[in-house]
Length: 199
Image 1 (spheres, rainbow, N blue to C red):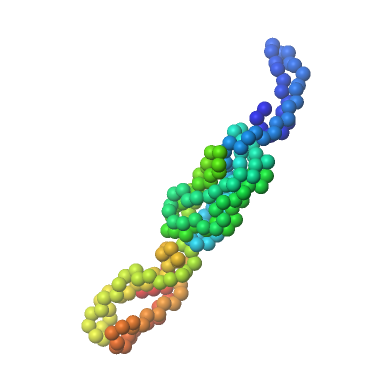
Image 2 (image 1 turned 90 degrees about the vertical axis):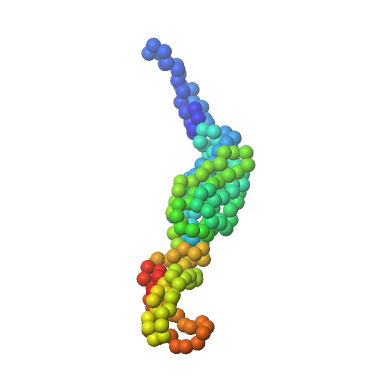
């Protein structure tokens, strides 16, 4: 018997069975980590909406319910930075990571969970999306032609989050003004962004 609970064991040969012996199995020593709740998609700079939950398990996969090992989360693939409470002491063999935040470029990421004396575990890949609009970036530098004529290359301004990801859901209005050199700026100086880009 390997799994926690009661098991009834008998021996048989040539149609003859022994009386059943009932054994009660309790968890063994901590040997590995397992993911109970996987980290789902997240937005850059924003806490996971579904916080990951990690179990400390024995060699057979039972939760080591008496374990209080400290479990640490770190970035596996995808780059960026991980913040929030990255080390959590397990309660009854379970460590819940609320408030974890990844700040980085959008795309596929994984998390690695580790603890002293046991095998680590890596999450399945999940997608990091853009976070909240935080700043503007120049997507296309404006190039002026002659006075009183439209720019030969219009400016394209990206609305991005704190990590520089384009916030494609943003439709905020972007206003341009002359920063230096004097003169008067004509035409549409305020433009609503489309797909996070104001042109």
